Length: 533
View 1 (tube, rainbow, N blue to C red):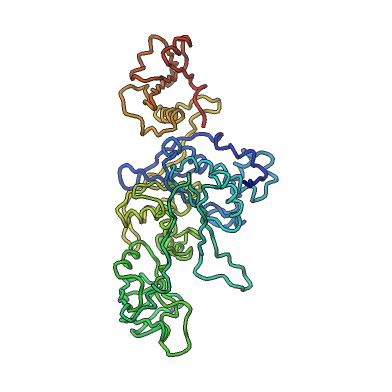
View 2 (view 1 turned 90 degrees about the horizontal axis):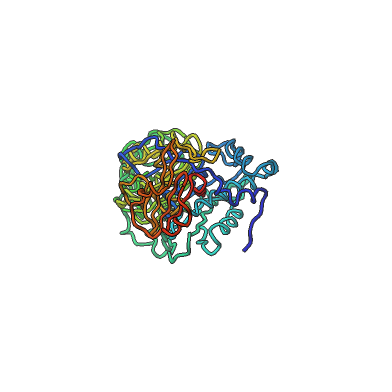
């Protein structure tokens, strides 16, 4: 299998093992008193490491939209992998070699350890979807083949980010983006999305009785290239594609100030239209739709339907308008992905209780998509977002709050989330336990380091030192802050549960090894024998 080499690769291939383990500190919960939905502010490499004890092997679907490495440093999201945080990280991890890195080397150094941790978090039947463009798509394929296995490559989807097609004008327009998909382990899942309507099934080719009447509520249609004013009821469009406006339209600030009713060969029925409006779908009415009807040679390439349902995925342009609408007309984020894209991908394999992770959260599109799907089918999907930039609270989390509550004329989805900051490291610089993080988090770490299982899988008990029983091995963490613990014949009463094998952590042990071995007891010294993963 071909592999990719770059400056700094040797330093990052196993760097995920060296990432310090940090705790997650809950700042607040929005909505329910407690929520399994998480938005985490902090370095996504350290955040992914912090998620392992609870979520390794549990994430059904990962969607990430990492930096495309375009060389543009002017966006809200720095897309040149050259932010001060990344430069500092590269200097620490890669060392002096970092001075010679190209921007492609930097991107690969940044992505590799993050993908390694994402692979650990995926469930055995899970899949990861990665958006990318031409700048790094070739490099991404090679490192994903290396990390996830070339045999687990599902395929690549092509997505047009803009409704305006590229052409041979003086300015190159990069319109095509890609979504790469890999499974944790190859499954029999058929990744068949919504199929485009064939010509024979196209409602526009059927008899006249396929015409439908749809009513559009106030402020739900954006009129492009049309001055504010009144458009009179009548027939518009073309002879081949007529569009009947059943009442006058009052346009103010580029939107309809009254309910508007059309009769056309619409693909959708009223109920479907209402659902889409409630979920934030942006409806555009082009200038051609309100041109006077003339029996002429005018025959537009695209019929004047208000909605193109092909596969139900909108564009970055429409998503930008949606985010602007959520933030009451304020432009807060450049080029966000549409929720419909993430919904489309999640529908391949996510059941109603799946966990979905996005470690490059940006404006919070993935959470929006999860909330939309839960509202549509009553599901209980959970999302985990990680955003390292400072806008994690005032853009990412704020968007999710507004989606939950409702915005403009769009009804809220309901739901909740908890907001976290990355906390202190579990180990001090001298290698000792950082007791300020608290015994609970230390116990969770020890349990996970031994079993690779979530602490939630450990049964509740009254013994303060028993972590739990896993595969007929009982684990004890005999630990007291600011006190030396000693495993001796006098303290063996901490072992309260019968098992085939016993693993006991303590500061020291005065029982000889032969006796311990004869009784299937394994002593581990704190902190020397605590695994670092």
